[in-house]
Image (cartoon, rainbow, N blue to C red; front, side):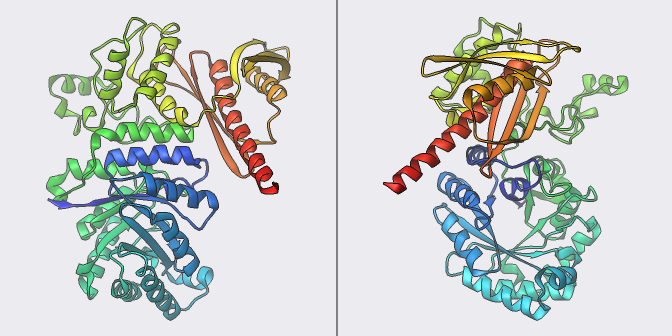
Length: 518
């Protein structure tokens, strides 16, 4: 069985898409999920783009031990230098250089002739070779490039030291038959092709990203570039969970597999959706709510008789397990920890204690705690435990008055350093009024809302409300999450966490300015 490498670009291509930006702590959380998934390569970012990107690539490189870590770089010296500085602390650093090769890109974007592009690729891959031997070269917009020119630049890249050749469908233009032909043709007609691993990076503009990636494998590609949940520019990238489970389910067809621990797919998907403040479409393959649901009577009858009648994979294979234990207010720490471990959460003692405290609070409001509730608690606390500020404001109590014919009013009491502060404010609704009261107490820096999302965790009128708030200030994003059966309480706690992080950042900047003056 051939091994196909999984190159995950959730933290680069996925994160740069609108509404999917992540701060450093969130990127580290995703990187740890990817490491547990056993992806082969994590593309941690585009180091030259900003100080924040550089910092995240560097931090991930220094913390991830079981994956190659890569940074993207254009074919120029500054990009490559920055990429190396960011990834050099990785166990296995990779620099991923790219240049456009399609006629339209060369003429209008690069304003370079084909010969100039060839020479730039030759020089910059050779320059990268002085830093490391793990070099990936991408021919941007390969599927709209002249195939003879593509063969030339592939040969040049391999001769200059590239060990992985990526032929991406940058704009989601190609079809499966074309992708299979492209990979096979280039592999079979380029001198030295056997020295490199060929890769595909497909976008989903026409809904064919997964099919095109699998066609690339049929043509000889042994690396697939993808993202968790298919995040990415425009319509997104190839979905990691789809290609992994397609290869595993249809090994008879592709004669290939990956090293992915598929039982971590569910957790990784939930974590990423939670961080960006979204939920999976109900019919999303593999990870959607209905992926393993059966409503039609004939389907239910078949599944009850034999699951294989309508299920080509099991929920357990992606980390969804049937819960035979009912958890409630009388459940102990050990039972909660054991169930979380079965769900794929390997928590530290501190994380488990934090989760258990939240579990007991929710038990007073809900009769039974579902797996979805537990996952929401764990996902919130395994991220927030690293990012909450102990000296920030916390909710004491709030009271709202609202109706459909009067202006909403909210009184909020917050605690900081054992001192209580109260204020009251009006708003367009109870949450707006609560946020105005919090602003009156905390007096945060000017900020905008990138995201405010509320979604229910499970069924029933006592379900948990999961709120994500992302505020933007100083060109940075500060995220807060709240979880409660009361959506106003969840919204208040989410906003407080975001503002506490903003205040901590402001204090850090002020301290650095003071130190510089001194």
